[in-house]
Image (cartoon, rainbow, N blue to C red; front, side, top):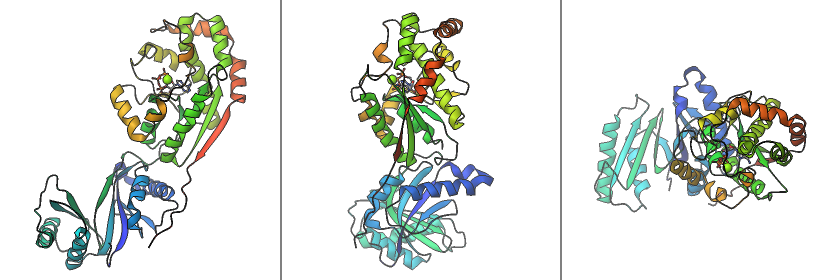
Length: 399
Ligand code: ATP
Ligand code: MG
């Protein structure tokens, strides 16, 4: 397939380009994340050059696996399997001809980009020269919009890169450039998507899950661990704390009016998360809350929940529509796990008429009566930690 040229992958990144003086630092983290994702797959040097990242000496027949893994790298705008050859017109025509040889298509186009202005031909001339050559060989028409086959050519420094297999990534920023946050992860649909949205902004999350075992089954913990397996693919390594909430909930239910239960459970979660965040010196919490989605998620209730935290609570899904959240959950692979039946620690104990506009002073007064401090400490002591390391086995290169 590659003839005289060498197979490589050419990657365009997304927002790193606007980071000015810090660009090198961003590029290094991006390249490091790519390297982690490609572990076990054959490749040579990974290096940044002219606002692109190159993965050299790849095995072209393994492209679907490279593509699947590279899609997990945040900050990636697109990646194309390329053949690298000297930047010379005859070589380019020859390699382009080889590229289309065994492909079925009805229409095609050539999309050239010239990063290296010393190359004598403009991208327009490259398009017409190579396009005419290919047309002579295949006899198929050129179609600029919606062609079956798009032959990409990029001239960077002394090399030309030619390829047609391209994937789009999620864009955003590489994981690790934006500090850590603590995500409150249920096994519902929303919080895994909230975690993903933060991953996409370069945040490297730690997770906390609250359960009410043994009153509720341990299924929610199992579901959360499965969700974690999916999210870990974007981080390559992540950590979850499973914290028992039952004793605290029982204390709340024994004393507080039932319309405040949900809000008090939430405040307890946030207080515990806040304590964990301090341990990790993490500057923010993240939840999957969404304005108006359920009776408990009103602005007043969010205000009453915020009051229990000493650090900001980020709610990346606050303004999203449910349908968009579901589509995203499907796309990232958490939806199927989230819709598995489970007993959530909160919904299990939800009273028929929860408070929808909590008065902060009342909530504070009721909570103060409950004397929960000792229970918080005990819950954290009994928390279980679960680490997921994504490990890809070595892929043997078949010749
Ligand atoms: P999700 O689908 O994320 O569970 P939801 O729409 O079901 O969200 P709630 O159950 O009211 O909403 O929870 C709101 C947010 O509180 C969740 O998105 C999550 O961040 C946090 N949360 C709820 N239950 C738990 C839990 N058991 N453990 C950790 N966090 C939780
Ligand atoms: Mg939920």
